[in-house]
Image (cartoon, rainbow, N blue to C red):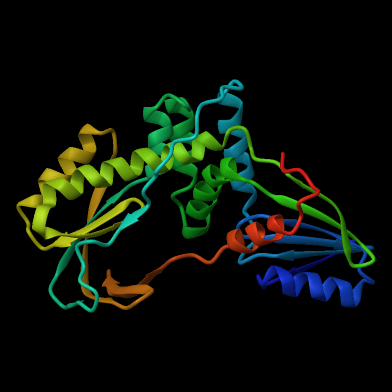
Length: 273
């Protein structure tokens, strides 16, 4: 089978391509960030990057330690909060960011989902470079996989299935506890709070608050570090700032989630598992 690696594109565009190039006979597997099209002896993978094999090894190691335990998926998880920023504010003063080290992995250790030995192994082998760190993040995200598979014959959908990982609670627990830590820090910062994004909280350069936030996070079971940020600018969909002399940008990630929902709404005769 010939494998083609392509950049992500809208799902409908992938379907139109497959209908045109492969006579409408193909299968399409869609997750939040990737799509895999199989047609004849061709395999097309649409993704921003290819998942490092480390991510699978980390995932398998953690998955073994669950022992089949199923928990309720946490609700109302918060991933970010920008309420400390005005709509058109540009900040040129120095800013402090306190960033949690290995936040999601730390939650799983603190909550006894994984052992300290597993935490140390994953953490020590995933801090060497950006690619390894990404593998660690993706390994936790793999617990929340909810792929959709569509079978097409002559351009029409003939079969559909979607299965949620029964251990999705692992990912959402990690998100929930990290968000709760950010909320506690936010309350302590009061008017100095600017925003938090997943595991990093940004606030005005009030040096008296730095040891307080570091201590709060330590009490909650997190190691964290201080980072200095400058020249924060906010637009409608992005945040730009300088950290360690380099320009950084934060923006909400684009996923296949909305298109996956639309596809499901057009398939009343099929069952979601």
